Each structure stands twice: as structure tokens, then as C-alpha cells.
Length: 314
Image (cartoon, rainbow, N blue to C red):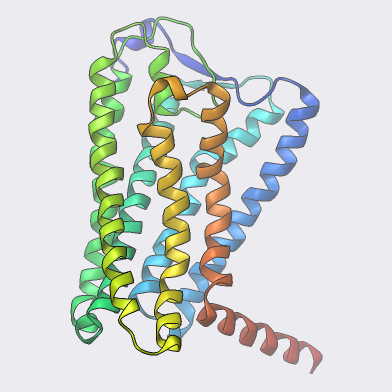
């Protein structure tokens, strides 16, 4: 991957958000807090979903895997970003940059696929409830999750190699806070049209097609919910989809804006803000979305907290 390129560029410099030490100190504090919240929130979701017998259902199996993805996803970018806030040397090696892009991209792809799988789970639960236990058994759920990870791992390996075998002869300053596809591609002194076409096709396959699948599935789900006679039944059915709908809207909305809109709509600051949302803020929000909007999780949390308080008072 690095054979020709290292004769030109051996490292990249991440410009980040600001060169002002005061601003950097403030950002370090903010993102440190957000990163701790991401870890606490997602680890809590994982532990509850594993430990409680009431949550041994396919939906919570997928939520647990989503939490694992969010922890890995943010850990690819945030720790290095925090180091760069405090360090004068903001460089990353050529291989380190390629590695960061690869892991960030494949984890993002896996999350998009997992959200589509979670939609299928809701579709079967609402539209074919009598066959739900047969269709969504443990083996099928594990195979679906494994497929999500495999798709991202395989596709992004080829995509990353395709980018980092380009010639980079300077400059080497990346106007971003991590090694993302578009900012790196801009630094190549070689024709990148084939990379852009390949990236567009990959984005359509991995983002747009799953999004259309989710859209069609929710049209069918909504149609089924509206045919439920009781208002309480409709409310319960829709409440099981609400959290997923919010997560899908935020995740796919940011991905489509970032990777499918024309270049003329992009600027470095806009790209950084959107990347900040899906790389940091969304993993903070997901535990809140899937816990505070979920009665089962809230009931379990309140019971466990109540037991703990009672034992401490005793």
C-alpha cells in the first residue's frame, strides 16, 4: 500500500478545528466529557442487554451490537483528536492515516447495514408476528450481524488500498480532525476520478440501497399498524419502532448529506461539522434514544437502582 507513496509523503498533518491554544483547551474538555459519556452510555446498554433475562430478544441483541459499534467507531477518532488538542505535533504517519480511514469507514458501513437489519427485525415483529420466533432465531440474528461486519471489512479494505496507492506529493495538511476519504483524496497529485466513481457506487450500495429498503419496510409497517383496531395496540406497535426511526433518520441523513451531495455543496468547515455529528454526537445520543424511549429498559434501570438504594440504606 505504501510502496510508491512514501517517496513523496510519509505523514499527514491534521489541522483540526483551531490553532488557538485556548480554543483547543476548551475543545479538549468538551470532547473528553463526550467521550466518557459515550463509553458510559454504551457500556451500560451492553451490560443491561446481556445481564437481564427480559432483554434476551433479537431487538436487544442488535442494540447491544450497535452499542459495541459506537464504542469502536468513536475510539478510532476521538482519542487521537484529544491528543492533538494538547500536542504541538499533529502529524499522523502514512500507514496510521490509512489504518484510521479503514477502521472508521468499515465501522460506519457496518452500522448502516446493522440499522437495516434492525428495521427488518421490526418489520417481521409487526407484519409477521406469528412467525417472528421462527424467522428471527439466534442463529439468523448472529449471521445477520456477522454479515454487517463482513461487508464493511471486505469493501473498505479494497477502497482504502485504492486511495492510498495514489501519489501524494504534497501538500500533506489534512483540513479535518481525522483521516476521512474526501479530505485525503483532495491531497493527491494524481487523477482521482476513478476513486470518486468507485466511492459513489459504494455509497449507493452501502447507504442508499439500505436506506430505500428501510423506507419501503416502514411503509409496510405503517400500513400494518394503521390496520390495528385498538388505539393502545397501535401505540405499542409504533413505540417499538420510534427509537429506531430516530436513529435511522440521524445516521442516514448525515451519511447522505456527507457522501452523496455534489462537491459544490461542501466546504471544509461544513464537512467537519457533519463529521463531528456522526462521529461523536450520534454515539452519545444512541444510548439515550434506545433507553429513555424504551419502557423495558427504563423499568429495568429503575428496579436495579431501587435495589441498590435499598441495599445501601439497609
